[in-house]
Length: 551
Image 1 (cartoon, rainbow, N blue to C red):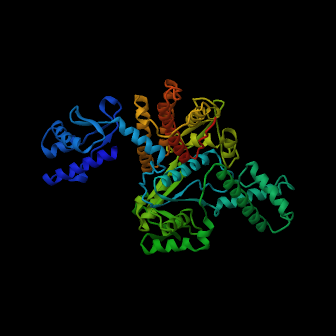
Image 2 (cartoon, rainbow, N blue to C red):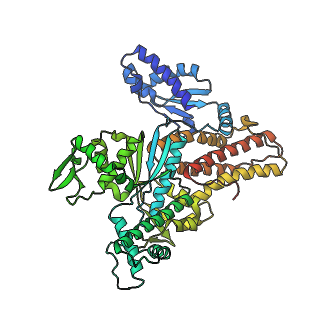
Image 3 (tube, one colour):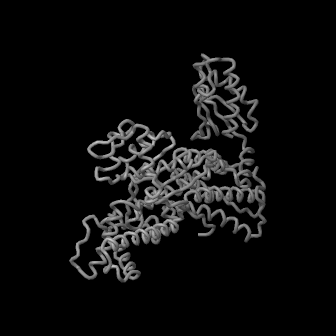
């Protein structure tokens, strides 16, 4: 209906633009809203206020003249009236909602709004350094990134996902040194542990596995032993990371190794490209990027006087390669501690000649685990962290993913472990899933009573305000999908599902759905329940959460 109203208003604007040269159709920025009160109609538009100054009339007079024309073109509207200082309110004929409900339950593409236009999108997320298992902080980025990929795919984008493996540099050296130190300490307890080493128990486990595979590990050349320790640690940790993500229903399409950037000569290639564009200079033996020419606060070193590359160089090469692969939009999901890095990368992208508008960085704020009312601290380096696998084991994938996605990614979040484990209406994911299960329970109960359900039968009997309200709310899901995808905010879907479940549960408690003496109304109400279930299922699938038919 919103589209029908928009179409009718577009026709009127075209006519007015021919009569008044000052009116430019694309410049009339009106909005169509769903009023909070049903007394103000099903839809309301402020277009008369926007046109008044061009037509040199009061908004109310403009609105009244528009209503006369709209009444002829909008047949599914029972009444159009002018309210206040010039709002135009539309009251939709209830028969229209019966048609929409039928479309919702029979058309699998009803919610497919297609705003993505098949544009190619690459979402890079998690990308945790392979120095230890994924912890609950990584889990938030994983849940957000995967849900965003599902969301954008659903609305018509061609989405690929990627994990960037930082398998080169000092952190990998420290990882290998940590494993080697644990091996040495088995025969020499006084062997020093590296100052910047990793202390988690998983380091001992890697050392044990390596010792089983290479019994001579402590007898070979130390450098070779450390290299073996490093490669084995990366192999084991990456395998664990991939396993954790799969268990978390996160489908990473490609794992991209930093080492390959050097092996393929892409780092030198991009530096040469920047140089030819006049964005590199030498000073005190180091190679600098003129990032302050763009949006960075100062210039950055790309290669130290020692000949060692900084972290920025391979990162620039990596993003240059992303654009070379032909993507229309790049979305990077980073931890909040990378906020100072955003303008460096934006500067590099602009310096390479790419469109900065096609590069988005989403900074994931920290997550804290609340257990027994207390906040649990964690530190990857010291080994004091809560692995994602623990959270999955404790509350399950469904609750973990839903809880991560029910708050905006850019706000800090306290994950209440006790609430996530509860089986009550206070638990948001349980409440929403129960709405889906309740619809199927009603269908099952009807069949047990011998009711032969006919989908879409008797829909004209749905005349209660609560029934129309549910249908209208389901229709609203298209707008939620549009807003969520435009703003990269899947948490809007979680909010929506909770409200939909609330409307359905309230309707269930206030009305009998299965009526022994009224088959048509029973069919109609069961159809309404199936529409709710379908809506919940689609929303939960985007969030990576199951929708059980029994609970």
